[in-house]
Length: 338
Image (cartoon, rainbow, N blue to C red):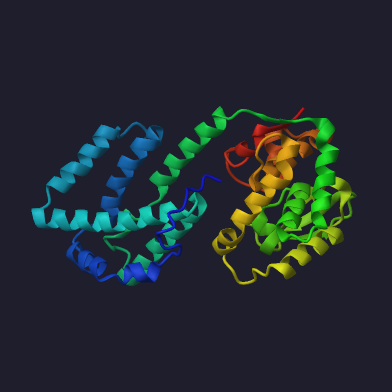
């Protein structure tokens, strides 16, 4: 979700040690060792917060006021100190921007945090480069653009009469020799992500007909041993699902690979296969991500009426989400069974 298009000319690895051992960075940190990084970071944060979430400043700082406070401080510095400060900021921001071109928001936050911890470990808590390593502004900007796009999106309606056709097609995929088709078949029946099927996840019996316990949730604070129950379209059991999952992993072994490496290896092939396989059924181009949303919509139609849950909470449970105010669920809710 809200992942920027990659610039293939950029390195696709996080190089924390390479960056913090950069002679130019070390030189500038030495030249700006006078900076009280904690108080300066507060001034920077006021500007960022006033730009994106004015209410969070409690009305104490308008954007103009926060900028004026920062400018007053910077203008009080001798020219050589101000130049060193701006050069250090530019060097750090260039690295953050490089990461932003490669990684989605969740990964960007994680990697920027890794840089901050590495800088503190090497140069101490007062390291003058730390204030410039923040992903908040970029992530908030992405979220605003993405949520606007979702709010403006037309609902994708799926006829209830076609649910059985979807299940039949997904089951046919499970026996295909193409690992991508088998992966998409499991996705359509269980609503799980590609990485969870290709590498992380597993299904176990839970004692309820038509349901299984799923372990290995990605993009979550859950451990691999934290499971939750999900309904399976077509009534397949855990052993049947795991037989397919294991056949996929035998054909394409991603053990020891990072999520980014798995994505880079499989995303194009999964996308092309999904368009060829499912587009005719939905009448619009279908990406792998869409299968997760469609699964949610079908379960919302079939299962939620038997519960007392509202749609948002139901989607949270089905997707394995535990936090947030609906931003993670919202993109999936453009699908609707009618």
